[in-house]
Image 1 (cartoon, rainbow, N blue to C red):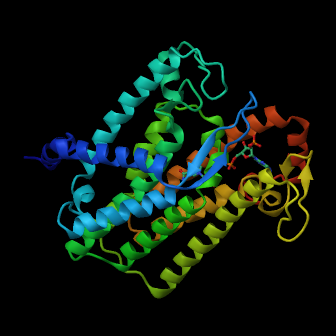
Image 2 (tube, rainbow, N blue to C red):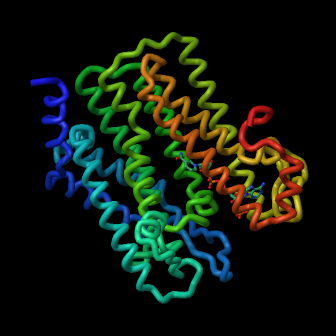
Image 3 (cartoon, rainbow, N blue to C red):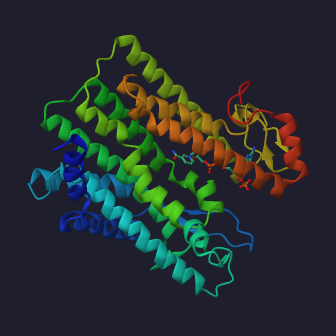
Length: 374
Ligand code: NDP
């Protein structure tokens, strides 16, 4: 048998979801729905929508995540759940999630089309092109059983990424392949994901939440793309050994820390500015354009310094894999393309929204992401 035929005969059956992978997904979504509703958390008002309304988000993701990990840890200790369940059934879970994404977005399409709601969050935007409307979505913030689905899916994706990583970690411990590279990769990602949930309220003012409608693109991105492709480095390290020198480890930590500082600092400055435009930035009164746009701090260095920080973080997740293969660099390369594309779309949106104020901001801050380069 040639190797390709052999690979396909192994690969194809492992893509067919078993009942167990469906149970895992159902348990996960039910847990998140219940935990999101009942666990305490700060209730945050979302961005002001065009009809003057504001959605409310209960930011209890960190509590929900730590409780879930504790429950799974106890169940693993008691032998009720295998910590390898995700690592052993990765492809099945991936295809089950894909099928779920298709079904849920078809349901969103049908319910969106038949909605007669006039509010900004639920008003249907129908172009008439089925593929376009299914892909980009029809409603801004659709709900199911009073759960904000957009917020729910992005939370599910970020937590899913950590759960996949933890299962990969358990697998590497079990098969004796745990390496410095794996430990570095796991620590960086875990810190990034935990930090995301510590600052979950900042998510409520991001582009996805305030501007993007909920269609296949976003649901697929949140539920499948984030957890399964951002963890490629972990899967790769399960099968590949990398020897890191001490200077390489130090440099890797440095890229992570600088990336984190810029990413978190920039997002925090914008979030604080939106809440109170008079809050000092780096100890000085903020430079504000037209009363609406922040032009100091990170936002005075480049118009999307937060993307720069995120790109450095993405790179730091891949560097533990060395440079012998391009495969672990999938995430930073994808993110570079995505963020350049997104930054272009955001600029168009902001130019339309802020008009001459935006033009003034462009004059004050000419760099898009990386000063003197782009
Ligand atoms: P931003 O958080 O940068 O949000 C852009 C919006 O911020 C603009 O539409 C505008 O909205 C407002 N804004 C822009 N410039 C200013 C300014 N100078 N002063 C005040 N407000 C301003 O972008 P995203 O939502 O795309 O990204 C948020 C974070 O998520 C980033 O750090 C990004 O890296 C990360 N991300 C990560 C992804 C991943 O796959 N890892 C994917 C996408 C994002 P308004 O109309 O409210 O003024």
